Structure formats: C-alpha cells, structure tokens
Image (cartoon, rainbow, N blue to C red; front, side):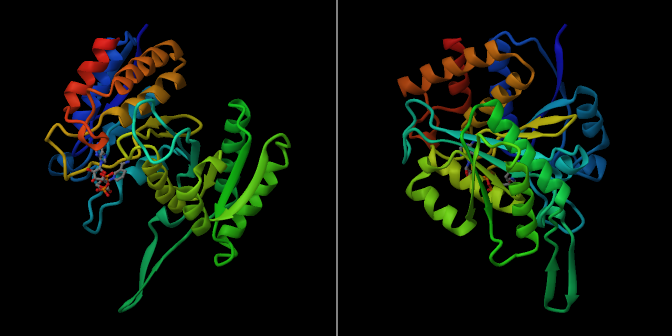
Length: 332
Ligand code: NAI
C-alpha cells in the first residue's frame, strides 16, 4: 500500500524545487502518494490567512509532510507560518545535517556536522510589547521542559548514529537565567550518556571557530535563534543554502524542508538549486524507512555532482532546476 505524504509546494522557489524533488522520488520508485495542499502568501486572499486549517489537518492525517519554503509576511497581525506550524504540531526538534557533497566546491572538505535546534520557544515565542513609545520588548522564553526535550533528542540521535561529541551553544555569561537554564538541562541530560563527550561554547566564539575550523565540531545543540543563524553559517561551509536539508521532528509528526527560504530574488527563473529540498526528502524517506530508495537517489545525485556538468548557478554551473532534476533522473 502506498504511503500518503502531505506536500506543501510553498512560496517563491518552493514550487520549482518541490516539483523537481517529487519527480526524482517518483522516478526512484518510491511508493508515495502526495496529498498536495497550499499554504503561504498565495492563499491569503482566499482564506484570510497563510496557514489554512486544511494544511494542518492534512499533516495530522498523514503524519509526514514535505514542505517548500514559505515567505514570512512582514505585516503586523500575521504570525510566521513556519513558526506556527512548528508550534501547532509540536515539532520541537529541528535537525540539519551539514555535509560536503562529492564534487561540489566549497571552502572546506570533509565537513560533517549536525545542527540540532530547539524549534518551539526562545525569541520565536513571538511575544512582543511596546512598553512605552520608543521602547519595545521581545520575550526570550526558555523552559526546563523544552530544553530537556531537545537535549534528549540530541543525545539519543548521537547514540543512535554513533556520533562522539555534543557542543551546547549559549550566551549564559550575559543571559544567566535563560541560557543558564538551557545549559543546566543539557548538562543534566548529558550525564545519562557517558559515552558521548559533552562540551559548551559561547555563541560568538562558535561563529569564529566554525569559519576557522569546522572539523572540531560534531553535533551542535542550540536554542532557536542561535540555531537559525548558525544553520545558515554552516550551509556556507559546504556550498551554500542550496545544499543543506532539514527536518522538523516531533513525537507524532515530522515536516521535512530545506534550510533556505523562498529566495524571491531568483523565484520563477529556473535558477534554484533543488538539492537542498531533495536532501530533505532523503531524510524523509529514511524516516519512512525507505532506506534503499534514499540510497539510490543519493548515489544518482553524487554521479551528477561528481561529473560537475549539470549544476545550478549557485554551484558555479549554468543548468536550470529542471535540468538538474532530469540529470538525476537519467542516472536513476
Ligand atoms: P533565502 O534563504 O530565501 O535566500 C537567501 C539567499 O540564498 C538568496 O540570495 C537566495 O537566492 C539564495 N538561495 C536560497 N535558496 C537557494 C536555492 N535553493 N538555490 C539557489 N540559491 C538559493 O533567505 P531570505 O531572502 O532571507 O528569505 C526569503 C523569505 O523566505 C523570507 O520571507 C523568509 O522569512 C522566508 N524563509 C522561509 C523559510 C522556511 O520556509 N523554512 C526559511 C528561511 C526563510
């Protein structure tokens, strides 16, 4: 019986890259039935909001979704759809493996990092006030439960994948209570995993260390905002935002999406790199225990990247999104 998965094409380059990914997944023989639902700026006129109820209902029914990027509406009154999805579905863990891909030029070789970002609180709680004219306040919410949950997720992930070290990232020298609590929970959880080395680093030092020598890190464990920023930095280590996948995982549901956004500067031009969403789909296929198909697609991608002839502009090539998908399908 085929597995039904929710598909959200998204805004900007979303439809271009998700179509590339779903064509490749289909060509690889995955028995997936896509239930396509629309979210984002394109549906606001019709539904009055960017996240219509049927999108959440579809994900709740199917448990798993593949999602293109959604543009964040800057106007007041609209919460970020991405943040809302993560909160409403309790997708508390954001997992972003960052690895070099064979044949792709980048500043470093042999980078193999995993960014694990808390996905539901911190400054993304969206609680803001005008205290007085000219004075604003944004709440950084850090709780014992969310910090413990994400630390446990990171250590369980490390144990399952035989990874060696977790580095908790903080600014507890300044935010003694909030980041202090995050560290306290991480330390406590780490005691249950004596085989995994645990260390801590201040976020500004981490930024410098990552661009000097990313090989010293294995798994990075971060609160929401630091995780958001550090994910993009890490993408830059391995060829850019067109290369890095992501997964939002909760106890019941999982939504797979690239780290990148809707890239309005290149949307509709066929220039977008489909590899980031395709690699996110591979995380999804593994989550669905379709390991063989994920391996087949990965091998086909590597043949294309190693040959180096059909690459999008961000990777130094001239191919379109569709041509990259066609080349991978030809290898399959
Ligand atoms: P962005 O990630 O969309 O783009 C940053 C830069 O990277 C741009 O120059 C873009 O052309 C390039 N880029 C991104 N993906 C690419 C790809 N697949 N191939 C080639 N080049 C690529 O970040 P930006 O411009 O800050 O955000 C645009 C919108 O996307 C905003 O509304 C933002 O809130 C939203 N966003 C949504 C996310 C999501 O749905 N998960 C994640 C990040 C941003």
